Length: 366
Image (tube, rainbow, N blue to C red; front, side):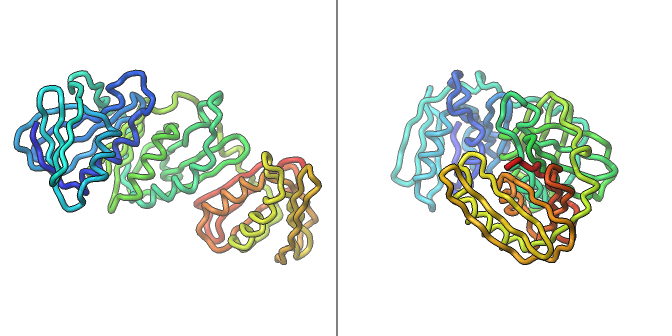
């Protein structure tokens, strides 16, 4: 193999792929990237056997070939090279020579034939959606994914396509739930998949950089994203996601509309003295007033008052303040709607003027 590739675009593609590489793998070749010529492009492939990505970059191909080499070392080298100089890659025996300007490196390689490669496409249905919109949906929900590996089905995000709702993303850790939806212009069939946390994060990064439509494909064993020069494939979590519709409150009669930024500031201040593990805060709703307070085992406390437009019954309810702040950071409207039933029932939070995103937070006893 002998190729020349622009440094800036090469670095971007290497960085995207090396995020997938398993840093502590017992299989040495999984710490490598596969470089493979294809026409007048260089394919860069990475996999951890659960998630795989293929990225293509324009290159000047002097001679074709394929090889694998350390993802970390390649990224670290290219990152430090002169921005204005092209990068020349040339294989010699079991080494890769990297030249740029007056810089020259030699890295050891492993044969491409030993690389596991990417699985064949195995999905049931595909949709086209604006990349930025999909990235925004992931940002609005991914913080609710669980980190508890004993409940594997909660450590990912449910991607669900249906004729009724279009595309919906749902994430929950058992204490809170986030849902974001988007209508689709095309006719769709019903299908769903639980996409693992790592793949969700990488899909978001790719979509944030996408300038147009991306293709999202779902199946019983695989989820796939095709976005311009990038194709990401992930195994899905083989489990049943909770029936989330049953969790969304439908009979919370009291509604409060509060300035999102103001409430976030007060919660941030109150949590300075809240319990450092439970982050518990108390919200007391009364006529035209909201009293927010927090305390800890050292008898320190914080109290704040907000004037609100509220004429319902008095309700005092406790929350993990971090959960509330995560929601406030995810929504985009200036004001947020809080729908309440009593001090023991889940609370529903919505953006003002939209039901596309829904957030459910369970109360806690204080």
